[in-house]
Image (cartoon, rainbow, N blue to C red; front, side, top):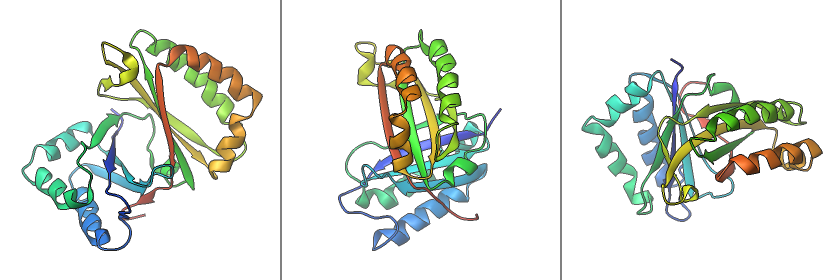
Length: 218
């Protein structure tokens, strides 16, 4: 089985920067502790560009069981407590994705577009086939470094699903030279044509850009 990528979002208190000030040594210890766990392959982090108060982690584990094992230790909640003074009082948002390839190459690009698409279970097979077409168009875009996509392991809960409240989540990581290259691609006629297909299949979507740092060895 391919590695499991943990995708986590932490909502920081206003003006908290994990790379400077009094928060920096606390988060450095936090990331160092995670990176030393058995089964961890690589760890990336950063403030999202659109919402700087959101800290995102992308952690590649050898298997999802490696991460679950660590979460069940007594050390795990204690670790979260060390950064709690810098977090808003909202739950940490987290899930796992089995991407077909390692995330390392894409996460090293100048800007990464992170897209979550919410799809009903009935529509999921149709979404996957259309996604393949869209990604082939995307690969020709100027300033694009490629992409990887995968299905989240956990069932997604999202208001877009209505009364049932649950469905499938597909996640894509797309590398760009910068946000301007992505914005230019969105004006391309080919994007508009395929976006219309997605509109019929997707019940909800979330997107942001981020410049990631790799913690530890390069």
